[in-house]
Length: 445
Image 1 (cartoon, one colour):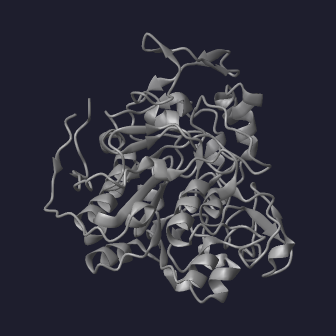
Image 2: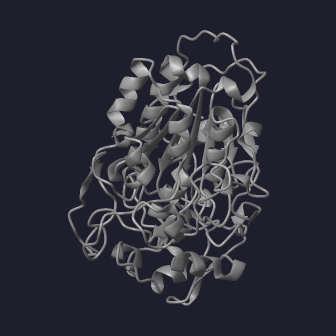
């Protein structure tokens, strides 16, 4: 593969810890709106697009044009995808037939992102990319661990997915600050600021999130948000000026400041600009747990540039690899939801909240296995499980034991069948050297 890389100067760390506790830093990098098949549907040994003699065997109906569309290689840097809220999920799923992806746009109504519903836009949700468009992502997948059964933890859009990432639940609460008043809501949990077609009260995320446990066990954490435009029109108009996001303003990718626990614990300041991540790496002060969120420009969210998003992610990973923290870090790279793009795997039923469709997942670490494809059933809940096992002695976000009960229907990180991310590591191997890649490589093969 014609991707330039550089091995940096490196020395093995002292063997002070064992097993999972060799990981002293977990960094979750979340990008936007890509299904597994749209990025890795042709990756060797992965559960990708069904094919025979190299030709896709599936053809998804296009009712408007009275034909069907097969998955195809898409060379374009900008994509549109399709609707990706709960109604669209049910249409795409089509009772397990996985054939509603084109029809979803033709029948959709989305007040938050009307562009999803424009029938005249080319139906590119059946397109897929490979190493020709995303060479660095394929290098990471080849050299480290690719997860081909990472499911979005809820069958809906970005805001619920980000809520699940940090709290394993998406809900609405009827009493300010009261976790017992919350009920599941994966479609329209309280919206931040003036997001949506009408003004409303600020969000009230009263249920318990991971930072509640971190604060009590003195585990350092940060939620890094890149300044820049959001991806969606907050006013529900077809064309609009995208609002800028920053750590001080709650948003669909920045729900953390609106959690009651974060406010009461005085940790709103732990939500920081992405520039602070680079400073933490340079000064050897990387928190134990970091979540890293993009701006719309670098998010890969339609209609943002894929190459620009890949360059942003590569820059983050290069900075970690060049730092002293690399020796004890696990990077979990994923995408928040399927973005309306085709995927052929029917998601399992866990509870009334999910799962959603598959999204790409990659594990990058000095202790990550080499060139492995992880077929375990996973979701973002597995990140929480790994973090809890590493830093919290296995404590779960469980209303019966976490000291702050809420009525969530299930303990997601203890769900039956959820895989264990420790299997993606070999803590006995000699730690891997950094793999620093070019930000904008040429097209891969």
